[in-house]
Structures are given as structure tokens and as C-alpha cells.
Amino acid sequence: MRVGVLTGGGDCPGLNAVIRAVVRKGIETHGWEVVGFRSGWRGPLTGDSRPLGLADVEEILNRGGTILGSSRTNPYKEEDGVQRIKSVLAEQGVDALIAIGGEDTLGVAKKLTDDGVGVVGVPKTIDNDLAATDYTFGFDTAVHIATESIDRLRTTAESHYRAMVVEVMGRHAGWIALHAGLAGGANVILVPERPFSVEQVVEWVERRFEKMYAPIIVVAEGAVPEGGAEVLKTGEKDAFGHVQLGGVGTWLADEIAARTGKESRAVVLGHTQRGGTPTAYDRVLATRFGLHAVDAVADGDFGTMVALRGTDIVRVKLAEATAELKTVPPERYEEAEVFFG
Image (cartoon, rainbow, N blue to C red; front, side, top):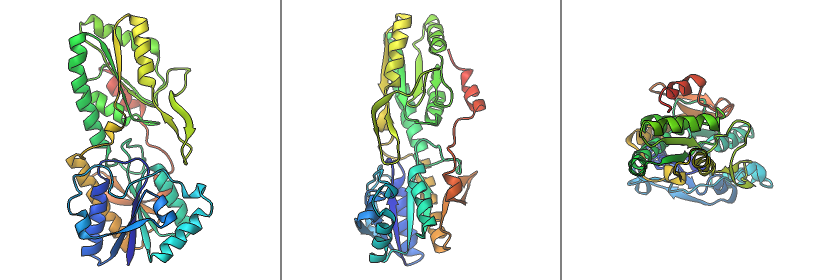
């Protein structure tokens, strides 16, 4: 049997751990050949692939990013995209695909399964916003990086007695902001799920200044003020219809400075949250996902995604995995509000 593997969407710590597990178990347990398709769905569209042997994955467990590269290519926006993929798979003798990605990559995987291609999905997103799994790998690393950044920014904020606004990733779900904000002792946490009042934020900031401390505000990139809209870097959309967010941190820092008369600075963590070495938790979770994805292929259980439920790895239908996003529930946000101000 010949099995293909690809990584789509934004890069994420732990991707290489999945690839390593797929190759090791695929070859050593089942005697398969494993083919890596480069640049996400662009690989099977164009035939851009490479064989993956044991030596190719020997030292990639702790490496960030992905040795296969990634992209936001959408085959369903390409002319004859599905037929081109089927032709490439037939020409290269690939019997099944393991697709590692988030909602967009797995949405394509679901459609391809419906169109007769054997695909098994592995959930990947630092935003932790896939509803069918308790956690996605990459999230723990992103939170760790954001928390360490908050810790470092606190010392300079206190030294200069200024407000510090830290913008983290989170388009529609505020999990990184919530977890990093709680772990870093932030005085305000703003998430996309709840539009915020600038007046209330300023009140919390001033309360912190009155206590002779420097406020730390953590804001997800997709957070919006009441009656406002998302702050965009550009109006351009990618192949899946997403605009590029960014700038709410700088906007909010300017508002705080104007309304309080205190110095306020913004720091956008951006892609630093995606980069570098994955945490031990993410390495283990990604490895387990890869091993169980191989089992699903061996069972011919296509159209499924491996998922974490409690401490167990289970299979769910791709349709379920992509049906809705997992957002921060009100009760989880209310836990954090105790520490505001």
C-alpha cells in the first residue's frame, strides 16, 4: 500500500511529530510506502511529492514547522481541481491520504472523501478551535510562548509604569488569549466571543494604575469593540475567504493612552506563536494522532478524523469535525473576569 501525507494551512509546532509517527508506523508495522506531498493541497494538485523513509524522519520530532511545507491552496477553487488530484494519486499509485490541518484543510478532506478519495484527517490548529477534539497540538506551544512573552513584558511595563497591550492570535476563538492571559496574570483579557467596551477596559486600566501597578491587557486579534468591526491588515482574502486580521492591539493602546493620559504600548506576537520547538505535550499529542491516523487508514475508515477525548484518541466523522468552531463559552470567560482590574 502507498499512503500520502500532507500538511495544510498555517504552520504549527508538532506537524513534524505527526509526519514522523505516520512514517515510522506505516513502514515498520504495515510495510507501506509513504509519500509526502509538498505545500498542502498544492502537492496532490501538481504532483509535487517526495518519498518519505525512516531516515527522513529520524531527527524531526523536536523541529517546528513542517518538512513538507504548507499553503492555503483550495482545490475546489482550482479548475478541475478534484480530477487533477485523482489523476495525480493514480499516477503515483497512492491509495490513501492523511491530511493534517485545521478547519479549511479538513473541510477539503471531507469534500474529497465525498468525491471518492480515501482521506483520514489529523486536527491541527494553534487556535484550538476544532469542536470535535478536546485539544489540538500546537495550542500548548502557542500558549507557552505567549505566556513567556507576557512575563517578559511585565518587567519592562513595571519599570516604566506604562500599560502594555499584547495582541495574540485568535480569529474567531479566544483560547490563546484566555489561557495565556490567565497564566501570565493579565489584568484584562479580550476575546472575539465577547465584544468589549473601551470605557470598561479604560476603567480596569485606571484601577490598576491607582494600585501603583502597570496594567497588562491581552487581546485576541479577532476581538472587536462594541458596535465596531474587526481590524484588518488588508482587505484581501485567501483561497478560503479569510481576510488577514491584525492591528486591534495598536488601536486599543492608542485609545488607552488618549483616555488615561498614561503611556501605553502595543506588542503583536504574531507568527512567533507558531514558530520554534513544540512543547513536550504537543510532541506527545501529535505523535499519538499520527499513530492513530495510520490505524484508521489500515482499517479503511476514511472520511474520519482522529480526535482527543479525555485521554483517549478516538475517531470522528470529518463532517462532525468541520461542522462548527469551538469557541470560548461564557462561563470560562467569567472565570477570568475575577482578575480584571
